[in-house]
Length: 369
Image 1: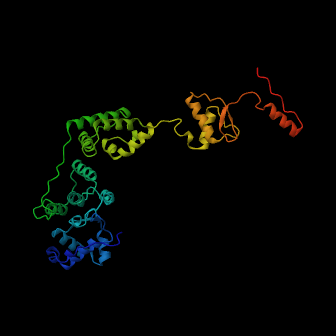
Image 2: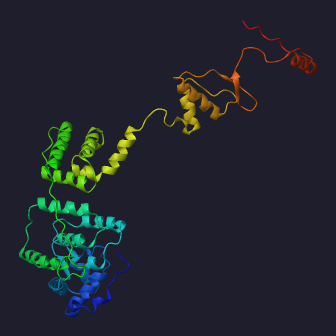
């Protein structure tokens, strides 16, 4: 629910508003500031909501919507209970990519068979450069594949009227303040796109020979979108799809180029993690890991040995092909001074001093064989 709605001051001075009845003008103002509206100007609005908010009966609400349709202001779909304000995005454009992402989520909530969705899609094409283009592409592709839904006479009448309404709202319309702009034509897939699509289906068949044959034209168009809009090469598309088909998790989730495109970044990161080197890559990150790595190689910290020195011995053992280095004698400051020799390090003078202090002679050095 919105806290407020914006109304242009020209609403009160425009010729269209001046020509409306009090009912039509009040309903138009209600739609612009309705608590049920959103950044698309297209939202779910059952007649009962309007009756409750404006304290009108259903007949007056229906009369108001009929007038707004005739004036080119809004269309209310009785079947789906959604309404679209035709010029809303012209005066309230989506301001940044983050708003575009939120708007994309709202767009996907609208039923595909509602008569308001194609009208909104046309407005988004004309006035919202920050709206995700791939969402509109997918919707238009879906519309091409779906059979024409059954419409009653009233719905057909709405459709014919709205064709003329939306033609007047296009940026390239003769009376548009933005001036003429080139029309965006949908590019067809090239033979190489279709060849790639068939190869991708072959990967699916390797995992599930009974897979139902897809619409190759749709698959080829998804390949084209990855190639033209996302900058992917055929090799990149095939390699990532094949990797996903070999992964125990992704093989059941990436079954089409459309899904590959949707999950591309996630798949790339997962593929990189799977290819990262294993084994010694993180054993030095904690003392517990160092102890575990040392135990794996038959090594343990010496008495008084710091963990830093122990890590150095582990690295030396790894460099030596897994063979631990000879034990080192530790000085008073914990620095190795050389290999431990099996003989006494006391001189005759030191033994004499010890005898004077303790009254006992120091042990004689052992003979080295």
